[in-house]
Length: 76
Image 1 (cartoon, rainbow, N blue to C red):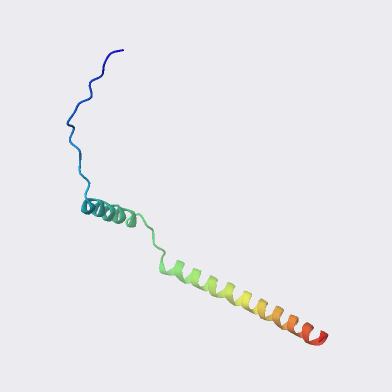
Image 2 (image 1 turned 90 degrees about the vertical axis):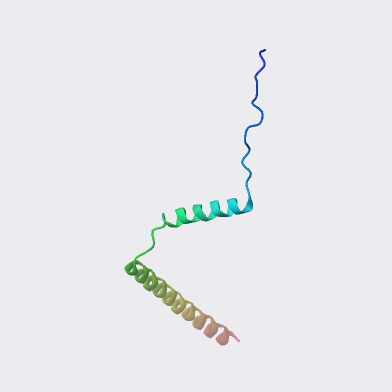
């Protein structure tokens, strides 16, 4: 089995906290440029959809509560 020479004294890159932080910031900036933000029309449509769904569900729950309370009051 032949011996393999491993080169000694390869330069080791010392990683500092500032280097890690600057790498993190650079990566974060690169990722934020990839983000596609919604348009005003999309935000308005989503807002109206949420308001509509919340209103319908709240009316449904109010009706169920009214029916249940009338049933309980008639029993007692």
